[in-house]
Length: 108
Image (cartoon, rainbow, N blue to C red; front, side, top):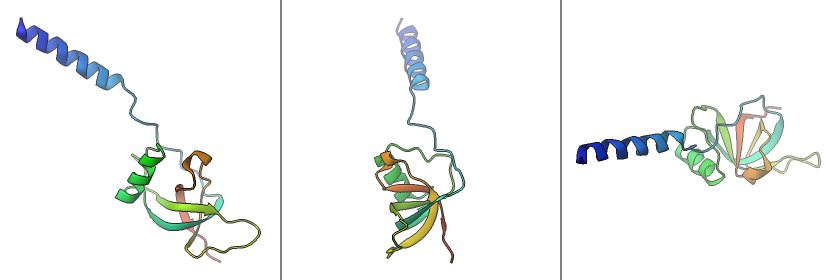
């Protein structure tokens, strides 16, 4: 009796674990189009990127691209970037400027 109950309980737990959605899929990586001023640019596989991505509910699993941390758009009014000037996938508003995806340096 006990072994049957254990098997049923284990089956239920495994089924629920497999059915539960774990985060959102990684964002699509598209060519960078948005000039950004970021405090730093790190690999999407770094601990810092994983931490910030978790804060905004972003799943970076499976991505290996440079990401900008704490970014703000560079406007036509001028480039006052005292940090790293990059071109990135335009970060969604929901990320609150904390992270930008696929950032490459802007060279003049």
